[in-house]
Image (tube, rainbow, N blue to C red; front, side):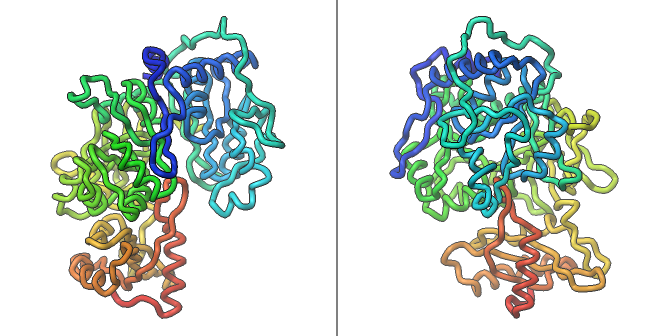
Length: 502
């Protein structure tokens, strides 16, 4: 698909490729298809002129948008390995693993260089951090330069003689850093074949509507690489979601995308701002409850899908809201494995996944066909994946192992924005199990306490010791619930006499 994309972009160069929104929600063209193809070719020529050759590593710290996509297309064309420097992974994690990757060049925009330099302190408050980029290798600026930025990559290098990679598909394509300790951070390595397989799986989800004549001209809303490439390849422009929930709601109203991909926190914020949806809505990167998907459909979507995906394998499974809502068993139904994905459960109850789109290996480790997800799960009679919680999130109470993910879906009654179960130290190695529930705006706590009474009772021996109403801390770029912070919050509120028995 990545090989086809440049040809697809040049076939209709005048058409919009990447869109954004003004404060009123009006559509603004960030780049046409021809401009995106030209930029990718210019970057490829510049990198080749610098002497980079197949197999070299290039660090990439560029915000999502046309320039980031053009950089990754240039790396693909030349057979270079891109190391994505996500500031959400943390400076120490990046520095520790980049010692193995040894970038020949770091490409960074002005914002990334600010996070790594003069804006380091305020960026840390937003949980964004990059190591000093110059310490990783030579640095070149992509896009506009600000005072103190590295020299520009430049786009005027000769384009004649720039090769197109003709090597094997098992070569490395990209390194993505995940969270971890500084002593053992994880760096996921995807091969060219694996990355292409993931794109093909996403493309099979984002199929063109018959009404569009197969041209795929209707816009898609989403900002990830896995949304941009398949959509642009089939001819659809992609709109980057507005950061402000109010602007995002206006953007949705005016753009009317056929397919929308937003994270669960983005969906919750958009719904809180009165957003209306249409077509199909997809969400992933963090848990998506049946209640959230139902709210999306109630707000106008024809279909609302939860996508189960990992950095190591994207995507792995998907489930539509009606199927998820009909599931009455314990745990969180995330759907049947997508075509090509194999699922198994090991002796400890951990979910294992394999397939063409799975990562090749972790940087510095040997290849392994099975991805150990860290999720406890079971496969139901239809072969669907039902999650039972993170292995490391287990709460030990009175010698009983409790996995929160098995019971948390029961907290998401109407009026609940988000709910988690966390352990709070109770002394002697024991823990109290506490339900922390974030109400939707305007929903009174007494009404929620009454609505939660029956679901809490049905938890049996896993019934929480206490119920608290509070805003749940989120972490990382995906804004998943921060369980450690939620546990500390719960401990503080209980010590202050807040909350009551569940």
